[in-house]
Image (cartoon, rainbow, N blue to C red):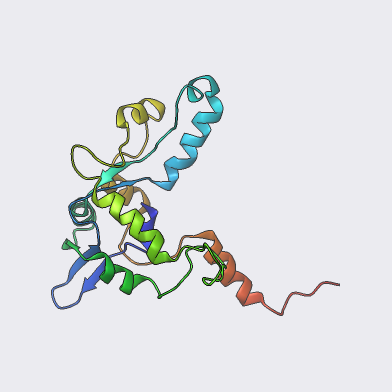
Amino acid sequence: MDMMHFMWAPRLDKESGTYVFEIPLADGAIPMIALDDLGEYARWVFEHPSLASQLDELAIATQHVHGEDIAKAFENFTGKKSIYRPVPLDAWLDAVVKEGASSAYQVDPSEPGTLTWSTSFTGWWNLWRHSGGDNPVIARDYALLDEILPNRIRSIEEWMRRVGYTGEQKMILKDREDKSGADRFKGRLTRE
């Protein structure tokens, strides 16, 4: 869900004043997770090893979120008019990703075996576009997740309210913050 701050942030259509969420989801759904809950699930695994070891996996998510869910939650929380506009995957990739950019941090895209953002995200979106109906490719056991974490965030709107989501872009990835912080001090730190 925290990717809503940057990669999936809306675009403001200045002419109409509408916030437009343009993602290549079609009528699918993304099994989003609120980062605040992620650590709580990890804690549960360590605090309940006998129960956790009986699971083949602990597939977590907050909610399977459709594009319309995002726009509706945003409008409900902020009072700002918003819409979801599905876009073709190629158009989204062209808008978001520089051609040939590596999907790994500080990796040369010409290295053999390196996935590009386009290759990596094409797989993501294809899975999510087929996870919106009664038989999703990516499914979650929400009843189990409710048992494990009764106070978990349960919807995109609840997440927006908790974080005070405004739709403005901001970076939240620590590696990006570290890099920009390091660049500010470049050449100023010396070892004696």
